[in-house]
Amino acid sequence: MAGFLLRRLGHALLVLLVVCTVTFGIVHAAPGGPSLLADPKLSIADRAAIEQRLGIDRPILVQYGRWLARLARGDLGNSFLYQTSTVSTIMERLPNTLLLAGAALLLTVAVAVPVAAWCAERPGGLLDRLAGALALGAISVPVFWLGILAILAFAVYAHILPAGGASDVGGSDSIVDRLRHLVLPALVLAAAGTAELFRYTRASALAQRARPFVRTARAKGVPERGVRWRHAMRNACIPVVTVIGLQLPRLVGGAAITETVFSWPGMGRLGIEAALARDYPLIMGITLLVSVGVLLASFLVDLAYVALDPRLRPRA
Amino acid sequence: MTAAGAPHARRRLQLAAAILALLVGAAVLGPLLYAVDPNVLDFARATVPPGAGHPLGTDENGRDVLARLLVGGRISLATGASAMLLAVFVGTLTGTLAALGGHRLDALLMRLTDAALAVPTIFIAITVLTFFGPSVPTLVVTIGATSWMGLARLVRGELLALRQQSFVEGAIALGAPPIERAMRHLLPHLWPTILVNATLGMGSALLTESALSFLGLGVQPPAASWGNMLSGSQTSLFTAPWLAVFPGAMILLAVVSINLLGDALRDALHPAE
Image (cartoon, rainbow over all chains, first blue to last red):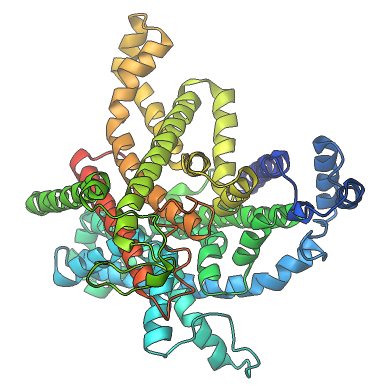
């Protein structure tokens, strides 16, 4: 087991190095510089001074070496845009993104798994067909458009919920206020993931229910609830865990569009701002953080496999 | 799918194909039949609600929304299709090389694939598009280059399994050279997988195009695309909600029918998951 974990760790570090190298290459080798240099009034000497201050006047390999060396000390440099340390700029926004992504994930699992379990028992039924159609719509809709429609319906016409932000400006910052701001972005962010998880879980549960051990459990007199959850769904959950694992990083990284539509002060919107302003250290920092999240999620998926299915345990 | 579900699946397939044909037809023939200039500015008639003269209203610059929807459909569908073709090409090539190119190439390509899957592609896409300047070719390359990984893994997995089959050993015994073996004996078995993946990939390419255009990084005005017609719509939600509703509905309709088609193809062809 320890060997398996160590191998996975080494593998993850290697992937991370590839991510850093490729991202650094794309970001730095592309023509044009940071938006700070875009001002046409800058003299050549001014430009040179800024380039020297930002350290982007050196050869790209030297820059990469320095970046890696600083990374090893936990320093991601200073954001060009905010003039503050990249790490603290990201950390300021990260809790908002984690709140939004966490709420969306909770919604996804709480809705998709029970509905899929129900639908798998009555395939072709009214609820099954309705859920299937809704799921098809949810994976096909542009997330930003869903957000705009939600704002149109609930903020512009019905005036029930706020149109954006994480709390009222100058408001009390109470829990109720925060929750009211969370509802729409969380629902919009959760929509596609819920649909995807529903489809996989339903297919998986349908396949499990046809297997002999489910019939055996019924023949033994296990109550239907027990058959559904202990026998069919536990086995159906193995591919489900993979889908959830694949969604974790997309929730954190992919929240960018949702955050933009709802003016949510999170890391995703920060990443879009950084990319638009060509803020190298901030782009690199956010990319690195999200990639670590992805690799961590896939590692957790492996551990969950082992917990759910003894057959997958690596032999010592 | 069970036999009982078969007629149902066929009906869905027909419905999806009909909607898609209608959309493609509207994009190709629509601008010829509906002879209103999509780019003519008329500030005196800006943000006119849908009604006589302008069936779907006008935008904040007084341009006819229906004319822009029809022309925009051409650009959106063509961009989505080109990006999907590029992703299919890169994915199939990577998966084939990884499976048949020996252990070291396999390890290298699969670590690259893992890395590409771990990167938040939206930021990379935005970075690349701001650096190289947004244009349709850059958009196609960016979307294609960030959506080949799933297919690469599927192709590699299937080829590794196929290689063990006796007809491949037979081809080796008969002295077929590696390229011929791959092209004639292996790749034809991958058609179902590639076809289903390409169909569903077209849907996600359309969604990515619309998201990037919404951020102002896709198709540039005055040219219209379904995505960039939405980019200004959020600021005029209160005054001109129809600007937000129609282009999004077109994207939704197109992607729903493409996904329906993909699901139906998957059920009909049974490719490996």
